[in-house]
Length: 186
Image (cartoon, rainbow, N blue to C red):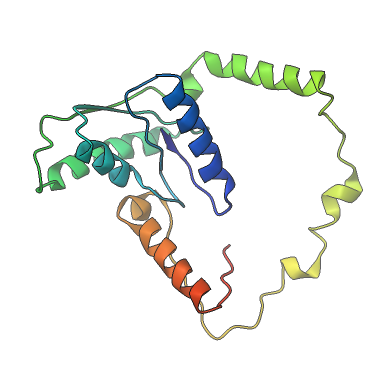
């Protein structure tokens, strides 16, 4: 399962839940979650995990919306690069394929209709007042950059993530937390 990441815990938790549900449902022998950007494991890391576990066939299933055809085409190149760079064992016999886009599947409309139906049945639809919408946006902290001595910027886009930026990010954040330094992500 290949998803888009983010800076909160939600993308990892949601993907982990999906992976668990699919694993329990018997959809495949092994289900591994990975991220295109802003989280780990990256697609090459997940492919490596599958290969090390002895997989002979790997199906990459993009579960993100909206579909970006350029990103999908680029992911094929990431998979090809991963296969060409493996030297510790032979991956030429591993068949790697990518499923069609989630956004192109007719079942997505049924899932959205079910979400609306479930929300209405559980009376989960509550109007949002203008007061709720403006409360945080008007807070001065939103636009005030705290005093700082240094700026550190790291790319977490798809290209950099596929080349290990997520691991660097996780390591750096871990070290900064150990040192008691607060990190602000934008």
